[in-house]
Length: 283
Image (cartoon, rainbow, N blue to C red; front, top):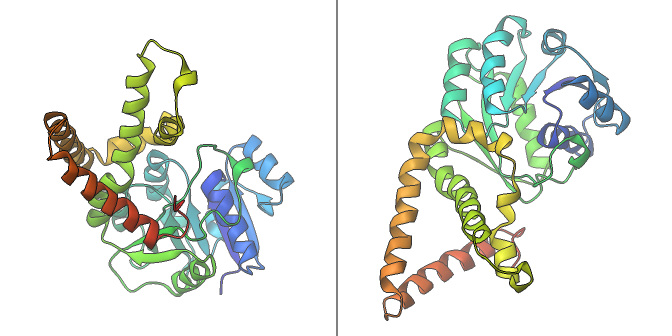
């Protein structure tokens, strides 16, 4: 049974995880490892019970939740193995998984780590934006490692079920390959569209809701995306090539009957997403 959870990186995702735990019935202590300013805010908002240093936070934890940027997760994992208790477990919320899983398998006890990626977020950052329902009706991908899982990982899975998110498993390689298409290319496509339109000499008053919708992701911070683009470039590059190829085919098909096929394929995917996921606007 989980008694103490340490959240390392008490921002939007880490803070939301802490709040979701409370809403799901967790009655133990939630410790936070983050900057002094963030910890002060998290304490004031009731997100955590106590701000603490990294080593003490790991030593006291039954569950460690790594919610920092990917580069920081990769720096922390080699440090924390000696500090983990005999039954303590570690999970993360990194947006790419191959490098993180490799680091965990190299530096943490067998069965102590379960990679994770909640497919949830906002354009706004920081613990002030955290909310208990952030994961509700969102996918939460787990990437198991080798070794018999420690018992506390079962408790972690039980809490995820109470978050009312769609939990499923992929290998780390499968995750990074698929998410390049489902998350990383959409971000870059939105950014590219915003950059393209920014060079147009005209009034923004002429913009319609389509442009506003399509550039929503362009408001995301490069600080958040830098590590994602670096650690998953092996999959993002080919995915971008596929996207560029389709754009070139669209360019060549302007004014031809072939364009109808592209519209039909795109409509089918878009409607399927809105059927499968309750959180997407159905319009």
